[in-house]
Length: 115
Image 1 (cartoon, rainbow, N blue to C red):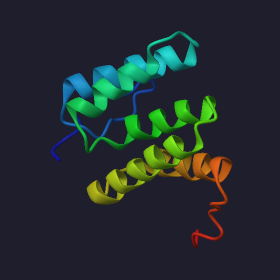
Image 2: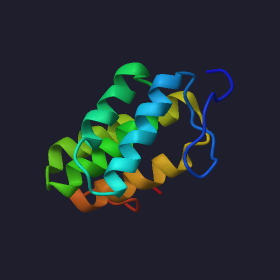
Image 3: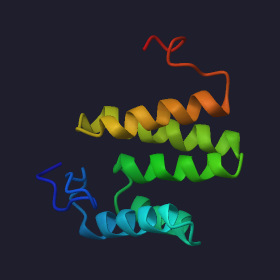
């Protein structure tokens, strides 16, 4: 991965080289936070544009958890954590968020995972 090409709404760099992935991710967050439909589709577009971008995977997991889709939430959270570990990026927010999602959707606990 090269230098981050874009930032989130708070000025934090996004760990993707894809402008379309960054744009779709921001759109998804905006839709999710405003409770408008279309967030899941925006996150899927971000994932399609850059499959290794961890944040849209984590956001997708969060949407699954909203709808009590535990297995889908766990899979998306695991994908997000794998992407962050693979890239070795600053996406600590992503890693932290997915631990919380996994703890709420299964018997997973950061304590039992050694964290």
